[in-house]
Image (cartoon, rainbow, N blue to C red):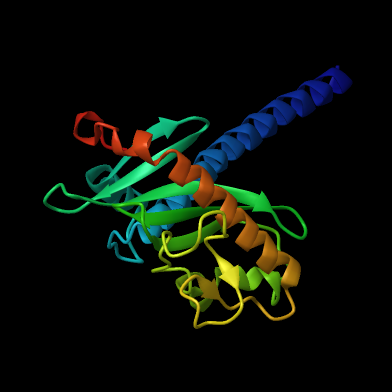
Length: 213
């Protein structure tokens, strides 16, 4: 009889702990998902130059995004459009991706409202080497691309190149990270080419009729 009681006690304890563990995992999973969504939203707002406080709560970030950003699926990806307080379209953001040294690099590329120059660049995820390729996250590297005129190069030439800074479309590569630098360059040129080939379709999007993001 004592043996049966012990077994029953162990069984009940096991069920309680299993339920507790499952509940904790579910709660943490939701929190992790919210944190990831907020991280991506912050990056989207940053590349679109929409002001927000670094200490903003996830709810505040979401409210800003809903107020200023609209999204439209174009092919397999989305086009994001930023609007100012007066409802004027300011710039676009496009998801970009490419192959880095150790894995894929994903990011967001912002272009001005005329799709004629780069307005911003941010990398949302990558696995590049810390202290070398991972320096693509540094502000000095990303800011180099801002203002590059997409119409300044000859037909068929890359829109972004590394080298002499006197060239309007040329920026500095990261020392010691040639493969990552070239990956970023190739990713940008490929993405820009695809975006410009779709520019008429992008301009035809009826943004006022779309729901906020």
